[in-house]
Image 1 (cartoon, rainbow, N blue to C red):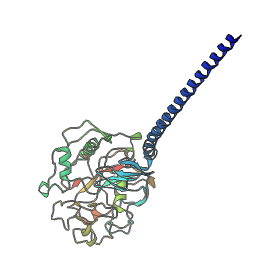
Image 2 (tube, helix red, strand yellow):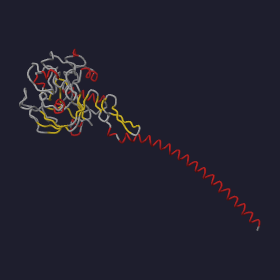
Image 3 (cartoon, one colour):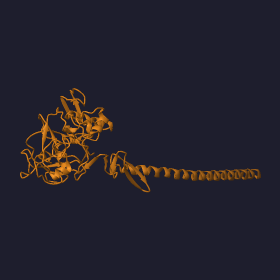
Image 4 (cartoon, rainbow, N blue to C red):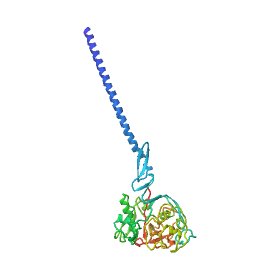
Length: 358
């Protein structure tokens, strides 16, 4: 009987030892828990870093496509990338201005001096904001991208507008500029002869956008005729963006002489871009220097009140706008409409580019 009791005592001692070990093991588990908690703290730090990234991800829509987002101190900021200017929410390519969407009156009143009958007034609404180049494309810009210079007035210099370019060559330049910036080309040119220097012509042109709509292009393009006049006017309604017209020929018109090179002050040559008074949106040389190609086929009759017009569906001439170094004053007005065959290559005709905002 006593022996049995001793065995029980030994058993109880063993049980106590085991429980002691379990407690120690529990302490180890608690220590491990503390370590895990520390790991959680580290993980929390990682989550905070992720939150910085998430803040930019969530606020992507608040930054321009050409801006970079950064997040510090609980707030995010947008900064325009190199080659672009703006507040980060809107970034415009250097050398361009961003024009807002809006409605305006195209054409001229019947009372305007020098008016032509194809300038019937009507309302146009442009539903997309767009960028437009501040100046006409220069000889230097063309040569840097295309490797040649088709201009007649080469002695004028690299800062003078490129001229003697066909309408097809202007499209080719737009595509080349898009490619240089990683953008989708707006145009597909087919059946082309020659190169973009010697009077290139093409048998077909298509627009690479939904519904063949040039406004839906993501790359660089020619402005439509309506975009061009909208850009020229910058909210004004007068013959010139700085006032009315006083002469129709090569005589001195004080308003025109302040904003453009025409037959009254050009000495029969082009001039370096950007020397005259800009319009309210910061665009230069819209009246004179060289006339500018636009996208539209020319038609005598304008459509009625419309949104995002693209001109006639067919035609023989493309619209040119703006007057040139050889133009009389009435041809440099905001509403004046010139036209030329798309294969035309003359020394008073150049272009500037535009691009739809995303």
